[in-house]
Length: 120
Image (cartoon, rainbow, N blue to C red; front, side, top):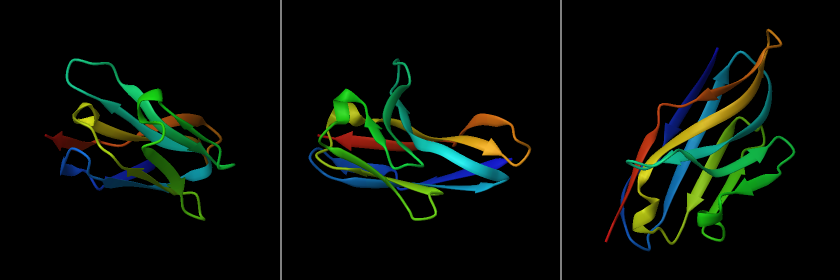
């Protein structure tokens, strides 16, 4: 199986910055993409940002120009740099990975989530 370990959440003031990290490990043959979704209370889970193994990134409309996703050279860790944070960015942020396992089964994996709270 695959483990996703998230870190970097916390409390920050409006206009501040945070950096999230997510490291993938386990029975990975290929990581097609990794990224972040978020879910605020009473709202549906939404895409924040994703990056493919070809380093093609995609962002949700609400974070474009403020958030940047990147990955390390091994492409097993993704980072989400969040700048100019707004109160509406408050949510639980979930890391995900689109993985081809060594068993040749392809499926999504999810982290446990990390809380980001932006206070005014």
